[in-house]
Amino acid sequence: MDKIRVNFVCLGNICRSPMAEGLFIHKIKEEGLEKYFEVDSSGTGGWHVGEPADPRMREVAKQHGVHLPSRARKFIAQDHEDFDYILAMDGNNYGDILDLRKGTKKEKAEVFKMRDFDKDHVGKDVPDPYYGGKEGFQKVYEMLARSTAELLAHIRKERGI
Ligand code: 4NP
Image (tube, rainbow, N blue to C red):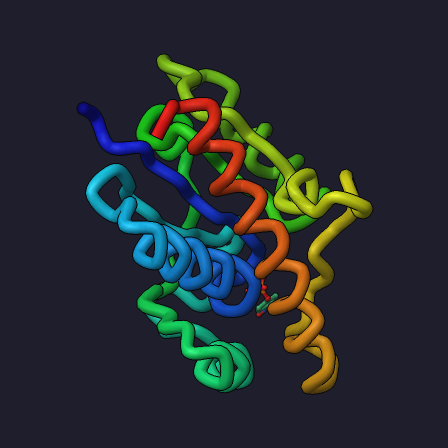
């Protein structure tokens, strides 16, 4: 069976999408589903390419026993052909992702906003914590913990695993 390929996308690929990626990996490991998945993250902007997650995001992750393996890379048009599920953290990311979809040969990926999987907050953004204080990072963690759990449940149902 082909792997189910999931790509979490934000602007810088150092705060929100690395946290989403780390949480999703943590959950598939807990549920014994690693063999079914390939998980990645990326950013629509290229300023931080090659960098690990922001130390403030890594600190929150560590407090919750979550590892963040990402090195920042830029989201590219090819990602639409390579991934099954693309999760945008906010409306700007969503628009930028769709702009890169035009002209791709195979429009494989389903593109969602991450909080479409956060029950009472469908359609809302995961706010960018980069220029704010510590509490913003904790809030992002909480939103992503709920949303990634629901996303996994959705994929399990859709794929029958
Ligand atoms: P992220 O946060 O999109 O959640 O990774 C940001 C990180 C860096 C910048 C913007 C957002 N930046 O402008 O450098």
